Image 1 (cartoon, rainbow, N blue to C red):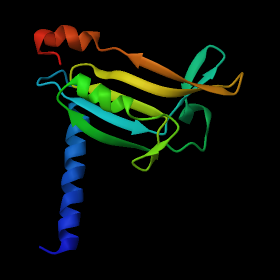
Image 2 (image 1 turned 45 degrees about the horizontal axis):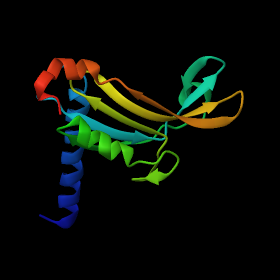
Image 3 (image 1 turned 90 degrees about the vertical axis):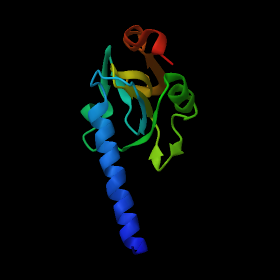
Image 4 (image 1 turned 30 degrees about the vertical axis):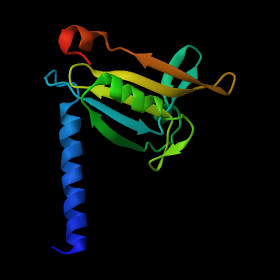
Length: 141
């Protein structure tokens, strides 16, 4: 097999794996897996309402990347903690780090938040792993 054909085959296989992973998020099945992704998306606080950047900025182009799939939440969370919001990683200016799982969907998110009143940014962190912990019981990692 030529080198070009190997690269094309590898890209096609990787795309199939990513599609399969996207289809698994929130499907409620076990074994549970944790999917870590990063993106340049951020939230905008306008008054007391929070909007996605794409809802407020017409020219905003969302870019993101799935980093990896993990067997345990603690491993996925440790990797998520290694990303610095506002720094470029894996070709993406990271403004949002997300962990999703098969049981609940989104279980963790750390995101840049832009306050339109003060024009200051901060970080917002959300963790909602309780349902997954309850469902998995002693199997939760």
